[in-house]
Length: 242
Image (cartoon, rainbow, N blue to C red):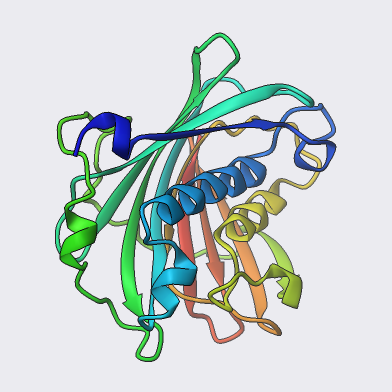
């Protein structure tokens, strides 16, 4: 299948609800746009979440590696380009590029996906039709990472924020939307003036309405480590930010 039939792009005008106090799009807002364009492309390819539900299957985001060169501003129109990339029978990659009105790349993302069975919540092998939709001749926008992040012991030094999961935090898979995880990690900065333009986040466990979440941050010399825990101490997500 050639580039014309497998690449997809969509334009968005940044809304007031998607910007911070400085009038620039937030990382969670950008994650939501990635999710929107990926879902629309999957629908075009006949493998979006609603179609998979008919087979008791669904897509689950496992990891996102995001790098932003410049955050788009309120009312600015950006184009997000995306395509499915080569993976294996249990893992799929999706690349994204954020382009300004002149076609300059202002951000990119490499996402890692799995397909799971809705009833068992266990990974499911990719159908042959999905495997055949992937582009292998285009380089990833960022290098594929094989290393896994590890939880950290806060030793009483971690900066913490506490969240109660609301029903409005859930998505069509009936668990917390990935953009909320990013939002909760950034909550630990409170009113600090910190410009985060890179985040590598791994989604490890589901969270549901009523859960009590602790967001923890540890500051390193050139980066920040984040982790989310539920009320039982289970690690839900890990991230490194710069």
